[in-house]
Amino acid sequence: MATVKDVADLAGVSTATISRVLNNHPQVADETRSKVLWAMEQLNYQPSRVARRLRMEASQILGLIISDIANPFFTSVVRGIEDVAYANGYSLFLCNSDEDPAKEELYIQVLLAEKVAGVIISPTDEDGITCKTLVESGVPLVAMDRRLRRLEVDTVVVDNVLGAYEAVSHLIQLGHRRIGLIGGPVHITTGRERQEGYKKALTEHGIGLDEGLIKIGDFKQGSGYQMACELLETDDPPTAIFTANNLMTLGALNAIHEKGLNIPRDVAIVGFDDMPWAPSLDPPLTAVAQPTYELGCTAANLLLQRIADKDREIVEMKLEPTLIIRASCGHNEKRGQSKSGDHGA
Image 1 (cartoon, rainbow, N blue to C red):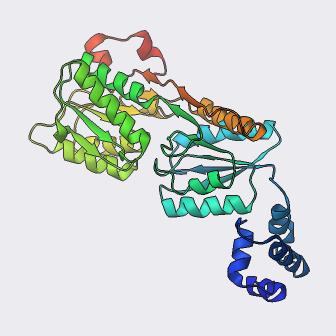
Image 2: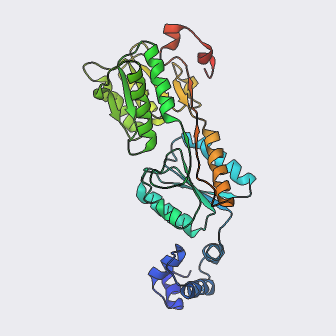
Image 3: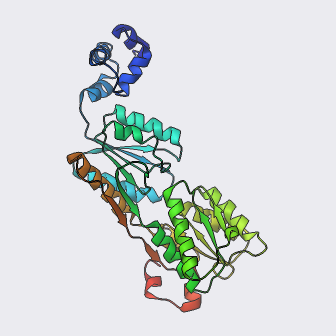
C-alpha cells in the first residue's frame, strides 16, 4: 500500500503538506491541493474515501461527538439523532471524546477531513476552544446537553437548574435539612447549573448553605462512590444526598450499601437522570428524568435547519425535565403513595 511519503514524493511536496490537504487546511494553494489529489489517485491512496471527500463541498454525513460513550444517558440521545438523520438521507459518524479535550480536537479534525455536512457536539468544556475550528471552517454546529459560552451556535439543553431545584425541594418538603450534593465539574455547564439548582432550593426554603455538604466529582461512577463515602464518614452526615448524574448515583448507591445503611431510613437519595433500571432498584430510585430522545431529535433538526439556512438567527432551545418520585427519597414512608409516585414505579 502507498504511504503518505509515497504521495508526498510523487506530488513533490512535504508530508506536512499532505497532512494539511487531508485536514482541508484553508491555507493550501489550489495548485498544490490538485497535485496531492492527483498523486493520491495515481497511487490508489484511499481514493474511495479521502480524495473523493476532499472534492466535495460536503458529504451526506453528520458528525456527532459525545462526551462519554459509557454513559447510558447517550443511548436514547444518539437514537433520536440517528432517526432524524436517517429520515433525511444522512448517515451518522459517531465519536467519543471521553471528556478529553485532546480527543475532542482529534475527532474534530477527522470530521473536517470527512467533509461532514454538520456537527452535533456535547463539548468537554464551555470555552469551546477546539470547537472554534469548526465555526471558523464554516461547518454548521449544534451544541447539545452543554453550552458553548464563547461561540454563537445553535444549542439545545435541558433545564438543569429546574431539575435540581425540584429534586432538592422535594427532599426539603419531606423534612430533610442536611442534604449532600455530589455534583459535576463546574467548568461544564451541566455540573454548574445543577449545583445552582441545589443552592437555589436551599436558599428559597431558608436553609443555610454548608459547603462541607458539597462534593464535586467527574460524572463517573468512581467519583460518585468516593464522594458519597466522604459525605457519609463526616461527624454529622447528611440525611439525604442529591447526585448530579446517573453514573455518580450508581457509585453513591454502592457506597451506601457497602456501609450497611438503609435507604431511605438512614439516608435518602435522589439522582439526576432516570434510567430504565431505576424502578427495579430496592427501593426504586427517585430521579430527575431528562427527555433524552427529544433532546437528540431536537439537536438533529436544528442542525438540518442550519445546513439548509446558514444565515438564520441563532437559537437556544431548553427542554424541561420531570421529577419521577419513587421510594428512595422516603416519599412513601412519610407521605404515602401519590400519583407522582405511581408514575414510573
